[in-house]
Image 1 (tube, one colour):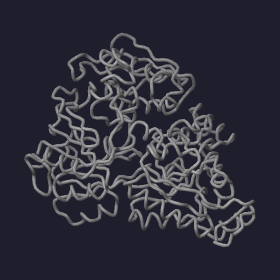
Image 2 (cartoon, one colour; image 1 turned 135 degrees about the vertical axis):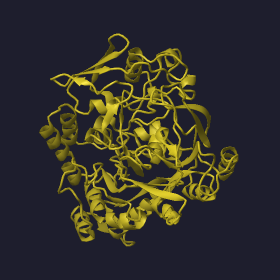
Image 3 (spheres, one colour; image 1 turned 90 degrees about the vertical axis):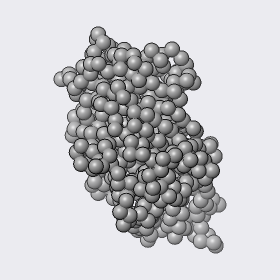
Image 4 (cartoon, helix red, strand yellow; image 1 turned 135 degrees about the horizontal axis):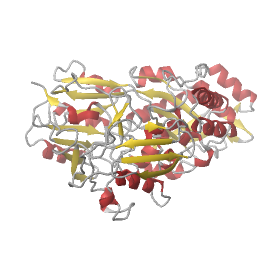
Length: 540
């Protein structure tokens, strides 16, 4: 899962501030051959503006675990409709009748960017290294079902599972690392973490922290040499600066908050793309805080928040209300778990629980004021807006929240007791989101289970959903989890946020025009209209 800023924040974490001077430096570097207001460079060059950068480029430490890494490939990949297709594998896996053995035949003739051949040994090396407790990979629990992996010759890999795990094939989109490079150095600190060698369509040529990542086309890519020869990801943390640079022609494309993207409506030289997502915004309610951890406070906040108003006013309609990590239009959503906006109901819950209004309107119980801090990531306009709207709604019920902004370095040490406006979300199987978000044994494990939520009922259902491939049993398990969150919500889920991109109208694909996929919380590098930039062609 990339849930609740957990694995995302570990693998795609904490964008360093891209100051205006850094953006100017990038402009000078990227625009030596400018293409005017609708393009940042020559037709075979693309410069995109993103809000964050990875902490590492090593698949062994979590990079590329969900595909679309550009430098690497997985055994499988997702197509435009989010269906699995072969990548480094020659075909989809053969699965045994008991669901515990997956056999992959590998594509022949694939080479890493250094010219060395790709073989089954590289697959075995990648998975066994990730599973090694000495490897600093926060996504290890995603492979909990994996019992072992072995090579049969150079072209066959066999995975053996400890229990039937229905979405295992989706886990094999993770990027494959070369044993002959990464296996000869410290997995956690070696040069491979910033100087990767992969089989993907692009080769990293430079990485200026907090400024940009530059790539050139892999002319020997097994899928065919990309037409876009130079690809730059400009790291610009500030939303307003990103929009300004796009308008000035310094960027060919960028991700923008819906309100800023609306400023490009009617621009004949650019197109706007809206991607549906699993990306949610939520408020963590830490169990160790005497106020945020109180069940009555949690239930009241779940009712007092006006989710639809947030969608309408903060997202300009580009999203939907969120009642948990599962979007309401997902087949896994438990109907009937929607929470209505009910200020009177919230006040009644607090009254009955002994939280009485004080002289200043803030409720008090046993001498404790219903007040606690709420942190959000500085520079992130959407989080700021969500935090302020949430605090405003809470105030109407007599709960006082003090909003504060900071970097993750400031916020992380405070997550144990302070609320955080967090994000998460991963398309596909409900296990991907809910296990790291809610499992009690993961409480306090970095950005996993940030609220330190603990429920025996939920823990049991999480294991039931993970350890069977029976569709009916899995649905029952995830329905149980979602209904339990209504009774004791350790988080207040606010919205599912559509991702909005603006791009110069200079490229197309063989299938006609640029597209987006259903996207996760982590986005900007492998997501957006450039998810398949290797397939782009200049418009004639």
